[in-house]
Image (spheres, rainbow, N blue to C red):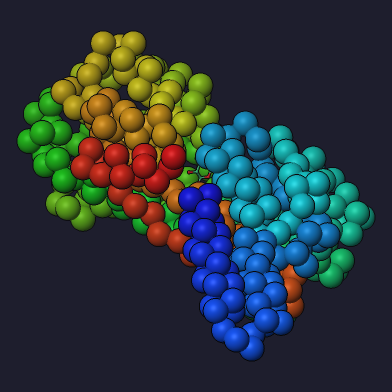
Length: 361
Ligand code: BGC
């Protein structure tokens, strides 16, 4: 993003120089010089930041700061908002500490403070209707991120023509990609115990979260769609958390031993925990077990390159954060948004892990 902005600024500066040069060589354009250069400078200012946004207040609620993925998301969100012209001091980001009551209090405080827009990553997606009512009653536009409210709730935004939207990716796609990464290895490579099946454990994120539900379902569906027979040894809830992922996979390894062939984790944080457990048990990814996650955290892409994690799926926090900020700006400047703003996932294997790492720099 920073690179894009820099090159844009450089190009505009070059245009400004060329215009200034043209003016000087013209015999009647003496007054035009300044105007032209100013216009180009204004254009440059507009391109890197809309000064009208400098005094607008943005309230951001994150379900929990102690979440690797949401940390990447909120960092990009803040940087992008500033690049668009918001002042850093007018962007307030609150940590919901994974507690809906805490977050609801933060939303009420933002409303009392008269923020111009709210960007909310709800602790519980099922609280969305209550949140929407509060925010819409206060006349504040609202952009939900990362945890998608249900279809009935989204329908209400459309039916009432409210300034409310959701920005995120369809988690079915990420689950499908996880399953395909494993299916593409072929049964012979996966079936270490020779029972003709893919023996797996599933480590789930927060089960209230649609991403956890869809990734769990669609990763296995992709295996079955590829004609593979599956055998679920265990399914456990790791709440998106590395330490919990570690403990759950350690338990599964001691319980199922060499029969455990594939570990599916709904996200990369839990996959990193799983990897520690796999290594502690003396197992080797790619040789006697496989492991997949979702998000494409830098550390995990490095593991994928080394072969210590079989694959992951890029959950594009950059595009999601930028789209959420753009949607907020549209509302503030009197425009509108689609109620659902999507984004594609990308499969990450050894073949393209370096490309993703380059993108994350
Ligand atoms: C990410 C997880 C994250 C969760 C938070 C998911 O989309 O893959 O890493 O913990 O969002 O809601």
